[in-house]
Length: 327
Image (cartoon, rainbow, N blue to C red):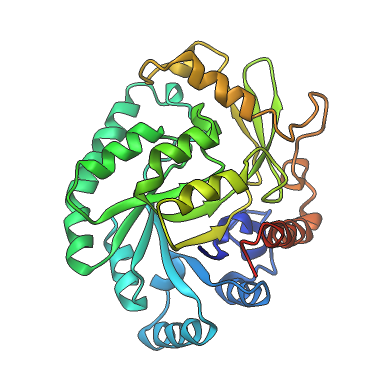
């Protein structure tokens, strides 16, 4: 059912996206070329490509990339976001590469923390509505779909609402690890959004409970809290085939402070059973309270980062193969 491949966000140091332009930059970053080579090694069938990489290519370079992906049997997906500005460049890159899906991050909010944005949260929401009203007709007219991601900012109900308010051109990029940052259990979230999903980010976290809520700690996909067999079974009820990519979490651990009163500012009321299901789901494969949750990036061990990222993506592939997802 899933046509699985890679996106660059679980390999940010290896590819040169993490620390770029700072003293901590990877001097041997592999960029687009290394990304494609690794995808080929892992048998990827989908390649979600960081849009600035495409924008930097001349026409001959794009034509060569199109031919290369076609020969490798990889479906391209353009990866962009409203936090990067207008989507015009993303549309141009999609046209040049003949990509039918444009993944769109809607905001820069992380950890579900609307309260940190104060009144600007409502401004961000208005901006999303306006952007979808502007770009959805263009996507539909071009035969493309904007796949908007649950990027630790919006709930399942809100995402479905975005899809329902426009007439075509918009679907969901479902990040399986990003239900916990907004206080929803993975299975509840999946059931609500499944009909609207058009692309999947396979992500997982180990959860470590704190006095304020819980930390979400990067791990190999399949080693954490997300019950992938059940999630994929729900998606299969609605879709014969979907593109998907492996995306281990960020090198910076996320702290979701939902046990504090202020964290809930900006959220509508929610049934207690919904939060209880989330907290129960977060206990699966959880980290001990006193475990060192830091990644090598957070410990300043930059020399270990490349192998750390590569080991994690390869274990993720092995875990997905064990589930029959990648062959």
